[in-house]
Image (tube, rainbow, N blue to C red):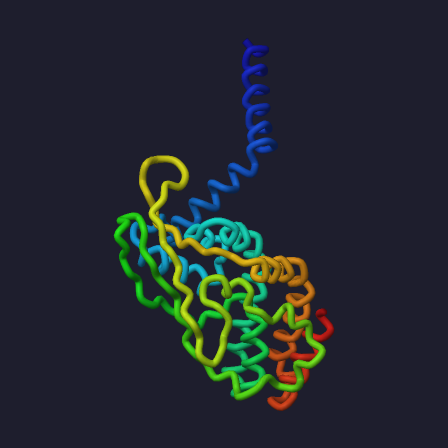
Amino acid sequence: MRMTSLIVLLAIVGGIGYVLIFKRDWIFSKAKEGLQLAQGYTPAKSPREAMELFMKAVKERNYDAASKYVTGDYEEKLRKAHAGASELGGLIDAIHTTIEDKGFKDEKVTFVLYNLDPFPKNFKIGEIKETKDKDKAVGAFVLEQINLGNAPPPEIKSLDFKMFTNGLRNPVVGPNPTKPGVIALEIKAVKKGEGDEKQWLIDVPMNQVQHDQILYFTDHYKRYVSGMKEFRDRLRQGRYLKDQVLRELTEVLRASK
């Protein structure tokens, strides 16, 4: 009897071990999926909902959740960029808040932080149109303009401009010209995963430049995160006067190349 119990116990332990070793990715995937559902990231039941949930995720710096609402190569790039973009974006948000609290707001500093941001939040949902195909629609995100000054500050010379592209945003909203254009995006109702329920996804094509920009970001963000953490802490500790902030910020970014 004892031998039988021991065999059963070993079988249970062995089964658990097998699951933990060989099914670990599956377990983590299901846990992540459950957390995202709890946060409101449910399958999109309409084109507008797909755009709203994508926008919600981006503005919460949750690019992994945002990837649930797009297709193709962009979906993969968002997931892989999530860790770095979320951390760097969160630091930029924190620095903006501290600058506001201290009364240090400056167009040149805003320009630098904005362009370093992998996906700035100044966008909204534009027009969404139905098509003849009931499983397709066309929509767009539109930039909301912010004051970045009249010209790039001379202090940004010798920075690594490949890090200042808003690379994660460009495929869906575009760059930030004086008169921003609108990128029309097809939104499709497709089957994804188990079951017959269709969900709406934003079809985001990527060109080679955008692809390379995101890869460059994921390869280089860690040094910028380290430098920006130090800058944030010094700013919070009151080590800078208002007229020192831009110089200190650009020195940190120059050293992060």
